[in-house]
Image (cartoon, helix red, strand yellow):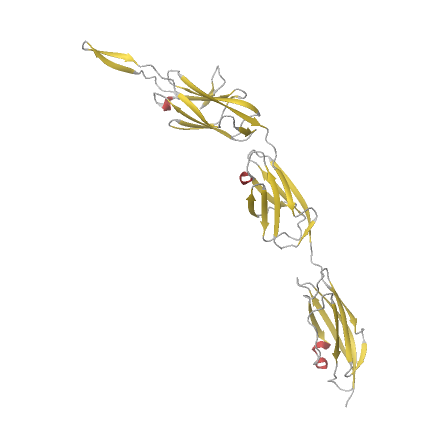
Length: 346
């Protein structure tokens, strides 16, 4: 485990082992003699972070070390410290002559001299130091480019959000990007990141009750940048139809021509895609030779003559002329007038 050394402020990994004497044997005048072999201090190198590298404050940092000793490396005690922060504590993993110190909270801002020390069982040690700079971490900068503030959208229609995200340390691929509605509903967009440019596709679009989007980007240090855009659902307004002719309760004689005129209005410039459905008189035998248009003109006008022919007995017959208009989204409106047809026998 890591512990501070009393005179250095470092953190140490301690392995308690028996001290082994290292000797060599020689023969002189028939006598076997033992000679002590000088102990060589262990060597250690900090492999990461790199010297003169720059890191974000309070962001996880990993110290990787390689070391060797003329004795068993498993018996070597390791220490890591900073001249600014003192002893560095964290989880350690060792594998032979390699060790990793995990610092989940990183380092404070400033220029640090990180020193790693390896101490063998005879208190011989080796050191290696690197300088690293730690600067204050900033929130990611997030900007929604489209849709723009106050834009309208059609509920249920595919929508693509484009944004710019910039962070001082993390690449956008390493950020946690979250898109949600103002109501807090989390969305699952198809994310496409190309440098600072980010696209978030919503194939199923937004709901009619959604009033805006919130885009958040979280960096590795937990800082977050947020951008919002207010939106308005574009609810399809139903078209309107007004029957201009015939007038309600208009009277017409057998075999006369009936002027039919109507006006369709809607929030689109081209109304020729709207569908006209005629009922009542249009479906009767009286109007068997009439040709009723299926669509209004581009400007919404409807105008034609219908020749009426009695199929009833002498007298007056009242018909209803009904007109229903349907826009491409299925919204409808209708109008109807009464027509009195005077029939005679011939």
